[in-house]
Image (cartoon, rainbow, N blue to C red; front, top):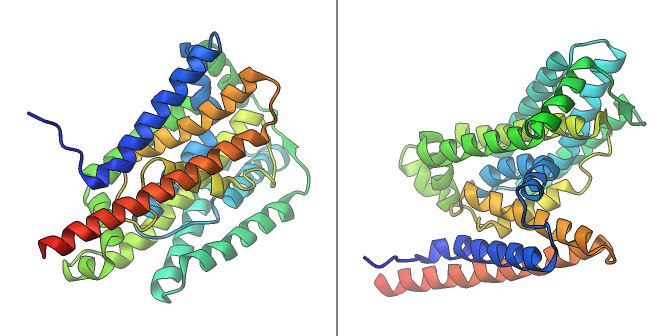
Length: 322
């Protein structure tokens, strides 16, 4: 039986090929690059980006965009540090409050977008300024976190596996299940494919759109919590420009910006491609870190062009069949 690659799967296949080729080339060029430890470091070092990209994937699949994710990372991290170190709260309670606020914030943005038919770009841009400003109101300086729980996290990461990597993988598996095997996930794909058709099918369009942004807020707040584990501190400037990195990872992972087409596994590949490029430059040692931006920019443009070609092919095929 011959395997058939449909046009909608072309971006995911292309992402897989690019990721494999980049990883193979780096493993051949740099001794030790292909070890298990380096691969785990990919997951640990990019867990914050990965969590934000998971939420962004849901948003883009629904046909929207969320520019507030990076600001929410900074707000959540400094809020957790403030509540833990200056208010004397247990880190678990601080993280729970940050997750609740992030979810509520995302739901609020989703409500504005749906109820008042406002452009997601502008609403989430306003949300970005609001969250970033609120973070700096909490503290203009970085707050170092010294708590026994964080020492336990460090011990676990050192002796077992980085906790940030464990959280990222667990969130990714949960997102894959929700996106591809639940009514909510099917509604997200339907809305991204055609919102009027989703309405005619009787799907809960309004509730789903609000929930999508709530999930994005939850993932961003979770990324802020992971950031505190990674740096043992909270900083309102954390996550600066992260929203653009998350969008790039999602698009490189094969999710169409028009919505309705994509896969959570592709987002993982997009995040790993980002990590491979960063780590390869670190192994190389002489090139500036800005080459990461150059490489990501070139790949992003290539994937956007590929998406456009795929969309034209799909539209042309539908036109011929009709």
